[in-house]
Length: 77
Image (cartoon, rainbow, N blue to C red; front, side, top):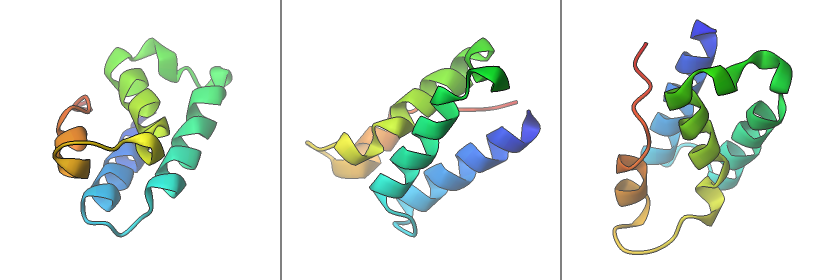
């Protein structure tokens, strides 16, 4: 499961540096959320982060992406 943490970090970094689109990250995260057999839901911080990344293309408002990304769970394992 360590690989998923690296992937999440990479997608979050890509969003912050605008090297990956919000839609691309959202699509990637949605596929992970749908994959029940992977067991991601058993790790609370990972599950919340994937859920929030799945909505990356919907996030608008004050502070833009930087403010939104600051509310993401820190995946530290």
